[in-house]
Structures are given as C-alpha cells and as structure tokens.
Image 1 (cartoon, rainbow, N blue to C red):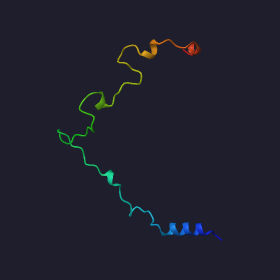
Image 2: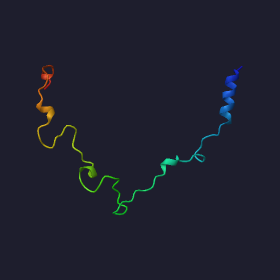
Image 3: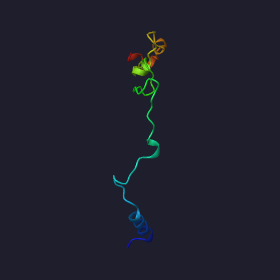
Length: 84
C-alpha cells in the first residue's frame, strides 16, 4: 500500500530516459578551439617562451631572492623559544 505521492514519483522515474554511454553527449562549452600562436603550433599553453613561469620552477613560499627572509628578521615569541 504505497501512497499516491510515492506512486507518482515511481511513475515519473520509470518514464525518464535511461543514461547510457550511447546517449550522452559533451557539454557545448567543452569544445574549445586549439590555440595557435605566431610560432606555429608549439605547445607552450600560454606560459611564454622562457623563464620561471614557462618552466614551472617558482621559488618556495617565503623565499626572497637570496636575501634574509622577513620571517627570520622578526623576533620570535617567548612561548615558542623552547622549540627553536
């Protein structure tokens, strides 16, 4: 003895189309045009030619180009002195 609402929900689910690999299609915004720059079809992906940005070798967080980092110049709190 299912309720009327439950019966309607089950009938709605039965009437819906089934999802399978043969009846799905890609979203319309996923098909982008391929980027071609002035050098032709080199795969640089918008990173430029040379340098850290192109090579993906960014400095670690807190590194300041060889000079003494700011975090080391400020005094430590006395509470944490036992650990340092």
